[in-house]
Structures are given as structure tokens and as C-alpha cells.
Amino acid sequence: MPVVRFARLARFPLLMAACTLAHGAAPGTEWADERQAGRFVLHADFPLDEHPRLAGELASLERDVTSALGVEPTRELIHLFLFRDSRSYQTYLNEYFPGAPVRRALFIKGKQLGWVFAFESPEFEVDVRHESTHALLHSCLPTVPLWLDEGLAEYFEVPVDQRVYDNPHCSPTRWAARFGRVRPLRDLEQLRDVRELGEAEYRASWAWVHFMLHGPPEAHTVLVQYLRDIQSNMPPGTLEDRLRRAVPDVEARFLAHFRNWRPR
Image (cartoon, rainbow, N blue to C red):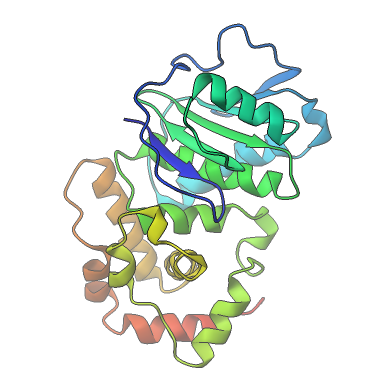
């Protein structure tokens, strides 16, 4: 069954019986603009020149995700279907994915292809980057733990110059760290359903991802090896256990990371 992820705070599981887009674009569909950026194939019912940075950002996103996580990229194409407004977006989904709920954007993973759907809104480019991150992860990995899937998507959804210091999650996480508040990783690893995730869970997932990408080098090594084991279909165990072995005082290091985190 396809894996489905929904953008931002409206992500709910959806089981689909079949997928009619087995070869990318729907038959008979005419698009105003189509182009390719790396492994992303963009189909839009409006001129993509209206978002001049989007194609370049997607090509860079692919490189950034595989480089930061140490996963081997695949040649699997990812198709993006982009719409001018919510009406045309929902009409398309109703035709090819009957039963799909009304959501601002979503990622669907079939057996051989991944699809991202979004329509223009104030958060359009954020939504596209977020769902495209899901698509990249699921094209490389046979499975992705829910919290990590969402934490990485939250990390990569912002423009590249905001990822390290200016993600909206950064300020409240630093404030919580000042008071010694840290969400245990074991709690996040127990999440199985996106309906269990609220803003606090998305923020905590982002925070642990940030810590592993920009904190102690040994934490980053743990993340990379964990994902490599998943990619190799080896039982990975829990990431918390791996982190504790590599970084015994991991919560204290996490708090220190955010208390001291500021532009250098």
C-alpha cells in the first residue's frame, strides 16, 4: 500500500487500494509547464517561472539530504504535481485518488514511484520542500521511523539559509533548553501514527535531528550509521540506545547544544 504523508499540521494516515499514476503523469493531463530538476519531475498547471528558485532548490535538496545523512541516492524519479489553486488540486485528487482528504499538500509513495502534490498558498514552497524531503527519504530507505521522517522534513522544509540558525523551531527549543526541558527520544520512537503528533512532537523531532546534524560529531556518526543499516535492511534497533552508547550524557549534551546555539 502507498505511504502517505500530509503537509504541516494536517497529516493523517490514508490507505489507498490502488494508484493510477503508475508511470508519473496522469494520462490525458495537459500541463502548462513541465521540467526536471535532478530526480524531480515537475508538472504544473501554471508557469513555473513564477517560482524561479524552486527547481534549483529541489535539485540542491536532493544533494543536501543524501550528503547530510550519508545515504546512497537512487535513480528513482519523484513526480511533483503543482496546482494554481486548491480547487484544481482537489479536483485532480478526486479523479485519480478518490477518497483522499482535503489537505494542502501530500506525499504518496507507490511501489516504484513517489508523488508530491501541492497547490499555491502562502506556504507553497515550504510545503513542496517538506513533502519532497519525505519523497527523497522513502526513495532511498525501505522504511523511516515516523518521528525521524517528520523531524528531517521539518529541518529541510525551510530555505537553505534558514536551516541551521533560523528555523521557526529554533527559538522555542532554545528557550525550553534554558529551563532544562528536553523531550526524551524514547518517547518519540514510540510514535506510530501521525495523529499522535502535535506541534510539540514535530518540534521535538526537529530538535533531535538538529542535535545530530550540528551537535557532537559522534551523534552525527550514529545517525548516519543508523540510516545505512536501514538502507541495508539490517535491524537498526533504537536510535536512543545507539546515542547513549556513543554519547552517554546525551540529554545534558542536547541541552548544552541549544543553550549555546547561536550564529558564529
